[in-house]
Length: 405
Image 1: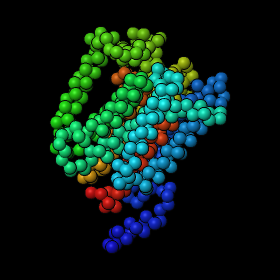
Image 2: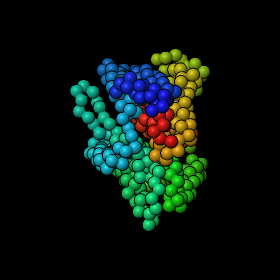
Image 3: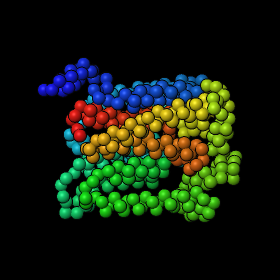
Image 4: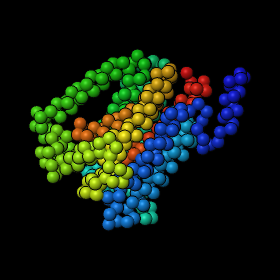
């Protein structure tokens, strides 16, 4: 055994079950810790307006966020130490069925904001719920990594090994987008799947990859047309619910119906305009004490900028960029396709959520109801992304330990 390998073994023995593995990326880890703490603080501040007249609301909201953050952090540590590629295909069927069952089970519960995407959990004194679609995003990454990564075998046709994974992914996206009426999450899932599917280099996948690329470009062009002044007629012709059409129309011109469909976006823009460089001061937001919907969830960024200004925005944006850049940097170095898919999938999870949330809050794209990861109040998204980072840290650690190339 070489001196370097002996040192790795000694280091592994010193580390406990709830510590990061040897070789993990510290930049990613500390950025996650910062976002977790900053998110809890800003959820507390943004929830103050909603707590007026309900003294227990603020405490319940902060306690829930702390519980899910701690659970997510512990899960991240455990996954980063225990995950390996041998288990990926071994436990895939059970995980796929469990997540699919949870997606269907969410349909039993009443809709929130037009979407039937949450499972209520009976918990004394606290309104707890989970959103299975967040965990479906992880499963999509793992399905593509498990079925398509590092495959050398030749098949009679491409459909012989794409049928099952494509069926799983399509099932998840259709349940979330159509049955749950959560188009924002469905779009995130589809974009993560599309990006991850471009990574495998198996020759029998190239034609399908090219076709999906052309389909993506066509959908992107169609979306751009919808957001132009000439797209209103097309929007009204789409088979969407009224509130979904209103979100697209509001992005085009929020002032067309400023006291109804455009009210939320206009208030968010006012918060951005008020914040300036340094904001009004922590806890001094005016908007959160008005009838401002989703102040501590989808629109928490508006409250952050109003209170902490552009500096507050950078406090979120810079750690995001560090995490995303580091994940892409390792993905470029590592040769294993399974590892690349996990790293790129996690990076895209962050990047797409960031684009959708910031774009929606600023009116650049329609509102999607997609949270700002680690910052918005919401246990499922926090728990899910921390698990996803745990998988990526496991991959990075194994790469540095020489277990994968």
